[in-house]
Length: 274
Image (cartoon, rainbow, N blue to C red):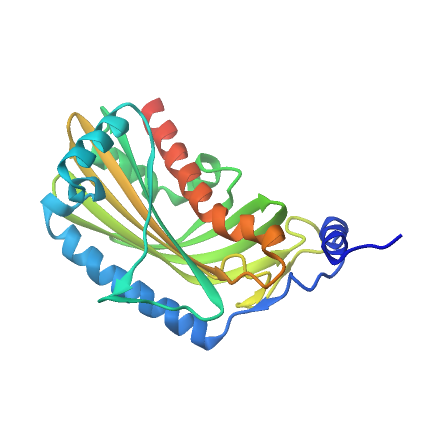
């Protein structure tokens, strides 16, 4: 019986045998390009967060669209926007990698900004609030509004991936009822056979390459009888090798959006339950 390459790779993934699609290595040129993307994005964010009228993405939409999105938010919907940063009039190419840039917004009626921020700063509880996506969460250190946090993420869609991360989180209060935070990954390592006696943490930049970097940028605004929470996530993953889009394409392209949606849903559920 003739076995096609596609079938062979699928079998290899199922039984855990080595498959050529699984290996990836983060290169310096990819990291440098991603860092450039982040610098451009953060410069744009700084101009927005300093202006209350432009603080939320919904408030920068045209009149009719803004009204429609606000209605969707107040009806309980999580509104997702796909973003793409440009350096002036040029796209920012990331050789060897893919940047996944999403924004999610949710409205929490009756919730105060302080409650939302306190929940997100309670990092030791994240493994409960955001399970099963967050397997482990540990606050390593705190200095005022700056936190060092270790998080273990588990992602599954066709393939299953676990990564250990160390993150720097910084919160800024602009005025009562308006807060922003930036959580930047400073270490990301893939974990083989996580949770078993054979568990092995791979060196940084080695492994499947499904998540090499993850930065999230949160904004909290108290208004309209509740709090709006917006999160931008910027994720770096491997690019998709020619011929393997059917296998890992759905993972690297859809997981960032689905993970952000899941996080926003967990946040809403926890705060409204109070």
